[in-house]
Image 1: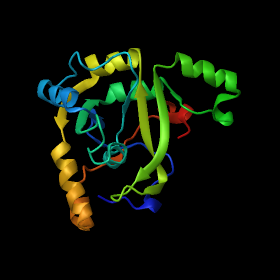
Image 2: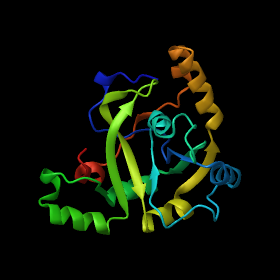
Image 3: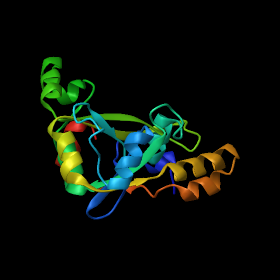
Length: 202
């Protein structure tokens, strides 16, 4: 997988995807994560009342969960969701921070933020050593209607990829970066209509 900085625009949605699905990553404590992978859906122990963040970047997820070593993030899930659901979330999302050129005034942004069922952050993408790269990775927060649709409508499948995370991490620790890179999920630019991302700074 090629992650050279000069190959990517600053803001771009990259993901492992098919014509009909997009794979995103989350990390949970084993009681939630293993049950979700077993059942192919989130069980009653998963809270619909909290904002849940999904990440199309495997390496950004590794940065966030410390290669599945952080407390309550020991189980990493690859969640395959419908492409239509993913686009719906982006279309109905608001940036988590104020941008004058996009929002006009802070009051308008705060109003949109309160009313939007989804939230977007653009954080520095990460390399295999989890160092920041000079382009951004999408983080998508889902709450309210978006979280309900995610759990009940969009999920196509859930896989526990914790063993893969640990295998790649072991290779990185040994300095075998080329071999580790070959195990990464293939993440390609995800073509989306301009109107889906225009209000999100991309």
